[in-house]
Length: 351
Ligand code: GTQ
Image 1 (cartoon, rainbow, N blue to C red):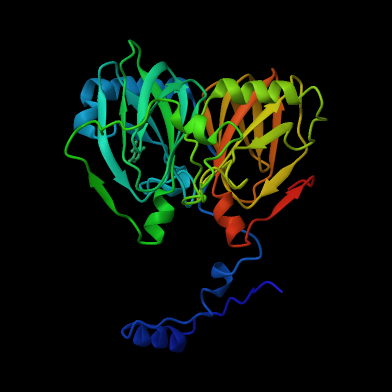
Image 2: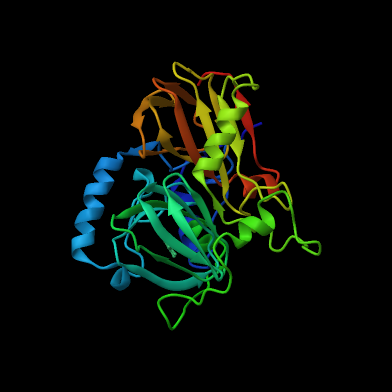
């Protein structure tokens, strides 16, 4: 039974609460119903951002501060239900980062995990733990906890990418550590493509033991992902909720690519209209191809196109409609919920 008690406040009770409050005590019976809810009750709201708006604001930011002075020139995507808290969902952070031609975002490292999903640009780079990788549109790139990372742009066009980090989760756990390197760019110790060769071709070094749980492959190029979806669609029936949805994995374990953030990509054929789906992992979506709309709960509809960003809170129903063939990248805290046996999903009912 769901707790529904809502005791009335008598003068005598209020005086008691006030008196015990001075000893840092509080009654449970006045807050039980909002602490232990029959279903998720989140301050996180459905929300969306148009890339054209973000892009214009970012270019303005580009005229106000350099990547070096800012350390990271990022505009945070703040959930409207969580303003001022630097969160897009209750436990995840998202921002859009701009690196202009010739700029460097200097090397640092921290316990927070980061993902990059490249929105626009070609030929910028990020270096992670001694290896550089090129950033092209749609690439999904991982920065594991405490890996040194710096970003640079030697191309002749601005590069914009989405950062997804577990900042609020690490904050909640009081486990933040961070440090700076004394040079802007970390020393490179391995050639570009080294991780891919070692870990990303269905081979592993014979004594590889699995490391930290994060994938040793740190760039999942869009071209390969897209090609996989294209080949699979020929043989795979469309899933009523997801179209054709895949998760990015750590090839050494088969688990999620990152320990705290689950990352996914899905293909929706033209005209697809999904069956209602809900899950406990609030999810950030980024369409990278196509055009359509997503209905969240009963009263939120986002009309999206390429590079827009939207967020679906925990346990809100989701329905996607694709006007054109579309590809959606998404991320959530699913690995954390799975590890704690808290993850739940429900297919097919209406709110
Ligand atoms: O690129 O290292 O959006 O440390 C927030 C914190 C990006 C980064 C963010 C970060 C970074």
